[in-house]
Image (cartoon, rainbow, N blue to C red; front, side, top):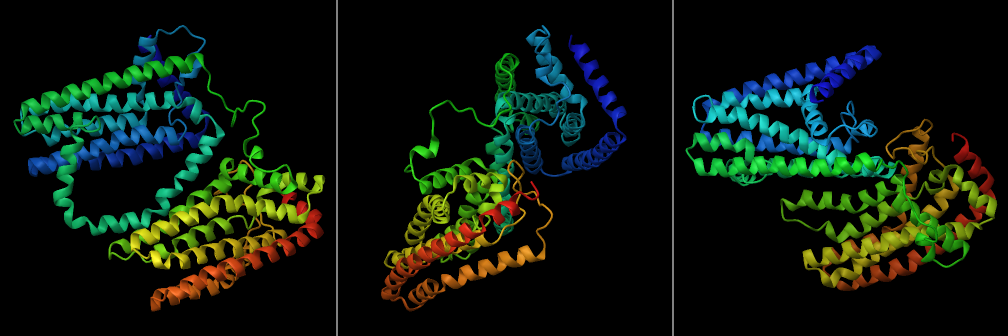
Length: 523
């Protein structure tokens, strides 16, 4: 049965190459790319035989641990990289579990990733060729480590089969990936600043990782080469135990997946559960607020703003952390709130054809504007308060906390008033419901970008009084200006918010049919 599964894998791969010339080209390109990486890896591993034992161990252990992490993470985020022998296809066949596990595990070596990983792992034999006791161990541990990678990947994929099949998980995983991209600059800066300490840090890290399932198998040959036979034996037992535990977990999750098909629906919700609708009053404003707040958590186009708004101020903070300057935290609350508020400037555009619900039910312009603003405020206000308190605690500027709060409140109220007018006046070709938030649709050219830039500039003008007072308070160390900023934020922000709802409501009422036509034109 195992041999039959392997022949089936090879047959499916051959047929896939015959199906489309582009698939053949893709396989060839991937193979050439992997071959190049393989050659570099083998040459580098062979060159490690000429360096100190501690350096060679550090490189092999950390690189091997990174490979195992990659095998764990990438298949889940990619919703299954290799589905040639999808276990779901064997539901109707009485394949014994032991043969199925063995066949699926060995078939992992027949793909480009598995073959490249195996050959690169075998390249560690060249690292330890000067140590007779380490060479045979390097061969055994290389196969053990790669088999662990494949089994871990299969176990993770099977365990997350139901989760990865849902549209929400796919959307959310794509949105979450933006977090390391946003933090990429500070991460690179921090790494470059710490290069001088790598000589001390990396060997210590490798020693720690070698006692974990991530690096145990990779460090056994190095310990044998160093004469640490006891440590090598313990780590080998850990590596074998890790493989056994992962195989057991894979067996359980696979058995469950074979009898419980993965669902493809977004969310299953029982009857009688109203979600956010039970938290708001039964009024048009409350209904719009509940609907909008639901979108914030279930629509990835909104969730992206909910992730970026708290993260972006951290970028500025990390950038100044090297010099010990955390002054940006005094403005982080306003930055986070401003980003969150401005993300609904295209709120009606995000509705797409669902905006017809508002038009058909006759929701007033004021109720629509107030409901959307209320939903945003429910999220933005706690975030702003948190950043204001953290900034005062880190910088020890509790006396100037009223200024940070005034700037944050002014940003919230003035911004909500502005976007209430802006989104009722302008529409954009936003990604449609169900599309990736990163998808770009035609029609958003220079004019649309200019409108967004002008609106954001107007946003800055509206909060300029509070900003000036906060800067003066920080510069002169006069607490009076901080309290004035709080007063101006409450009063001026409240006036602008009320005026924005009034003007935006009138625009909405007058232009509702035009807005519906604009947002549904390209649906």
